[in-house]
Image (cartoon, rainbow over all chains, first blue to last red; front, side, top):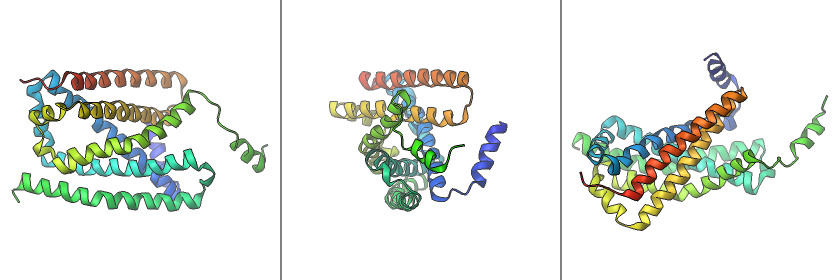
Amino acid sequence: MESLKLNILGMARYRGREGQLSFILHRLAGLGTLLFLAIHIVDTSTVYFFPSLYEHAIEIYRSTLFMLGEIILVFCVIYHGVNGVRIAIFDLFAPERWNIETQRKTAQWSLAIAVILWLPAAYLMGRSLLVHNFGL
Amino acid sequence: MTTQTEQMRTNQLPPQEGYESWAWKWMRYSGLLLIPLAWGHVLIQDILVGVHSIDLDYVAMRWASLGWRVYDFLLLAFAFAHGVNGLRQVLNDYIRQDSTRRRVTWLLFVLWIVISLIGAAAIVGGVRVP
């Protein structure tokens, strides 16, 4: 617990700018996606193990809270993907180009690309939420 | 005392090949593969179809095609392994004791096997009518 507090405090104090922020965002997005994925594998498997429970699980996903969570989840998947491609390309194909300047520039770009890709998705999912849960 | 030049020279040595460097590379290659797999899944199921159109019949219809079952199987295998190994790498940054690390690695390994098998069984078994 003490080391967790120290870590969070350290993260807040350390001024690593884009590199550090994209590192934290990448991890949070990845861990959030993994948490959902683990639950999602188990709930989908009810179609085989307990088919009558599946409709109940889907009912939960249709609630307003979960649909809002789904919009955030899609951002996590998109950001983790765009930023992951950035990391993979540099690490695998151009490791000599890792420097602070390219790190900063490409980190900004990956956030911008992720937001641009996410906006139409958020619009469609937001509209679906309004239509189904609020009768618009 | 190491000078800065010496420090830089050691940094440029290629990493020792081993399990961790293999896992490191695998995370990058599987990540690239997951772009079409995971994004395609999210685009179709979450954004275009939507959770209000998904029910047992929908899953049965989708899994009637072998292609989608293979797709879902690949997604399950790669996404979950990528995720659990990612969690292991994150936890290893915060765990300092080797014994704790080993225990956590085993725990994650068992969790990964069990949940993967549950998912795989459902994809192979398909939808059962209640």
